[in-house]
Length: 125
Image (tube, rainbow, N blue to C red; front, side, top):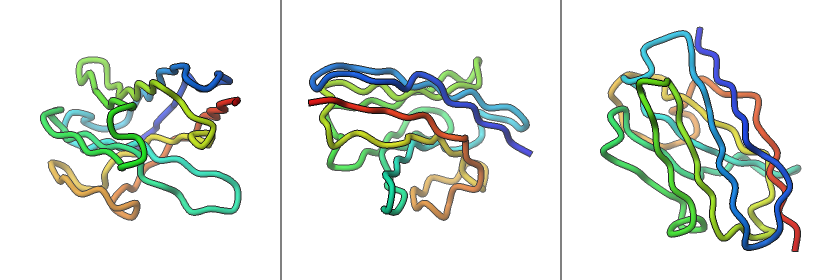
């Protein structure tokens, strides 16, 4: 079983920054692609960013490209999401997720089998 625990959410003004963290336990973290997703009430979960198991490849949704940065520290079993120039439309519950299959780099929501409980990010205008 894999446990994922996010932290770092909160309330910030538009233009501000937040850094989300996700600590993983339960399996070899360094073998799995990790992702960040977000969801607002009444909508489907939306892909935000993903990073390959070694950190050499990253992917971003067009809506966050150039503003958000995903990174990981395999020694600490932690993945981060640095969010800059935040906009009100970034308001959502952000969840980290671990891929189902080791050393596999795909980014569909259904490819991720383990999820954290989520952390609320609210951006005021």
